[in-house]
Image 1 (cartoon, rainbow, N blue to C red):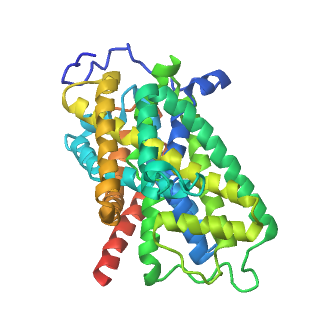
Image 2 (tube, rainbow, N blue to C red; image 1 turned 90 degrees about the horizontal axis):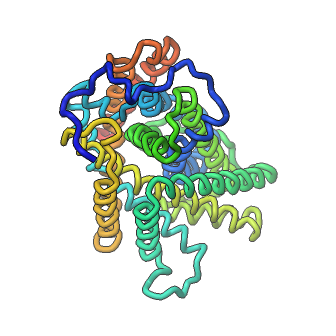
Image 3 (cartoon, one colour; image 1 turned 180 degrees about the vertical axis):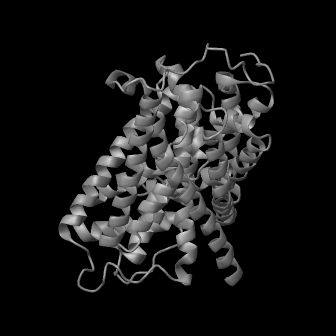
Length: 447
């Protein structure tokens, strides 16, 4: 690939013109566009669901069900921007940042660089811990340990992505998301059919989550549910990759149908994991570990004790596939957005922001960085994850503002911008997300 002109492309150039916005949704077009939304679901249905949603149910029963649904609603318009903007302009959201205001793109890259390696290491660590329940305990070379399995999973994911590129990511993620959906639904149906484990001893709406002591947990839940907003840029770039793979340029209707399907899956899984926590863990009197890996193991143990040994592989598969899909998509998404962002700064435009060689280099760098954290600085994992969480949470209103400005800006035709209702929801959501950042500051000052 060769570099494009440093300035914006000619608005009269129709070589990359998007399909007409009014084109109806067709089944064939939907199938050809299906992928980026499923990948978003695979990335989102991870720690925020397996750990945060389940902990919400374990600690507060059904008291936070409405809060979880609202958190997903508040993030929806800003994550949708990544898909709609690319569908109607033919540009990546990162290029939209660069055109809208000079500091938007560098700020996004700072956020990505500050959080990428830590988040990849964290999800791989949880995945490795869950894998210990599914492999023999006598594997050579320390591979039976959580750390050894986490490193092995990282290596497998990097190899799959380097050898198979987007096509392998797309095919594998669709299978994984289908498997985790089926296993989670089976688990939830089995639990709901038996009723809450501690039904006679606990009120499913007690204790109240609306207290200062619960504020740090609410802040974390809002920040991570369903995912950080930088994933909107991933969706945008995955649309490019899907177009290259299928040879089909999706219309706005097709691209948004794919996004909505993936988002619906993330919401449904968040609710199911909260119900699992409420039905199996709430009111048992046990203390639950703040560590995501240990907490997931507690969930598997309590679930098996509740339903019997047959349920062990079901919940173990649901938990493992949840974290494996997140590890795989994060290993693609963080390097993909970093590579594209720096290529934009170097003058590339349009589809040329993606280059397999650059993407592969950044993927190896992220994988090596995450492996180094797991192997040599395991004691720093907690601090790194905390830093990444805080950065992601504090920048949520900033990214929301940026996405809204791009969506409603001069780059998007008036007919493709948010309508009255969507814009109202986005503005209310921006106010709420900003308020939670203020609450977070209050909780720190009182802590």
